[in-house]
Amino acid sequence: MSMLSIEEIKLLKEKLQKLKGTDWETFLGEQIQLLEKIERSVDATNSTQIDRLDKTLDWYREDIKYKRAYPNIDPLLYEHIKTKIGQFSKTNAYCSLEIGPGNGIFSKDMRQWKMNYFLEVLPELEEKIRRRFKPPHQKYLKFFLTGRTDCANIPQGSCNFVFSWDTFTFFTQPHIQQYLHDIKRVLIPGGYVFIQYADCHFDYDLHEAKRGYWNYNTKTNMEKIIKDEGYEIVEMAQFRPGANFAIFKKPGNENPAIYKKTEITLD
Image 1: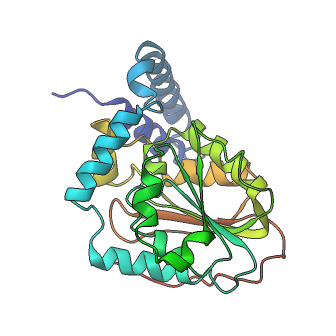
Image 2: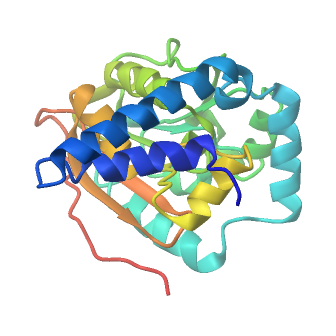
Image 3: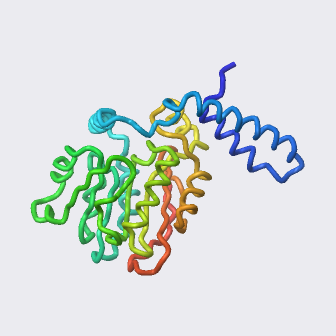
């Protein structure tokens, strides 16, 4: 009999919590307390393994290199994400921000904005992403480096759209919350955020978390983080397992681009 991983323990605890309020109240409460005790013990004694926030720059370099050779975004998924991005580009009065552009798969899809801001941990990726744009557009590109979770150098209230794919899946929940907190400063009132996240209710995502590639997260936890940071959730859905996304906005009405939810799934 195999032991539960910490990710599976957290997932089971979350599922049990949803059953509270039924006739099983006392039993479930006891089981949840037991799981919480195990969870705290494992987290405390294995903090280095559980907190996978601090992946090294070399780790990211190797990951980028691997995905350049073996892309993890197929043409159909790319087209659906591109279509979503296009729904936010109804105005060129503001700037866009892409967090963790990596190999720049989606970077050219930001051309309709006034300026395209890119936030990365690897300085050498600027040159690679610039190659995707023709010379006349180079003056509309601006790159920023970050050490962890801040957008400190990006002008306040300059963006009406923030996008990130294949990046937030690597972050712990506190890391995500810190990022969302700082993103609010960059957004105009009514500005949108469109990010991928891990949902370990699905086997694919749970597998990636258990092997230490992604960090543990679920839709329930993600909803709480978004709401705690004062955003309004617009859409949380999935293109396919491993391609979960959240779209949410900063409260306000200054954004001339209004996103309308569409039903898109991949078979």
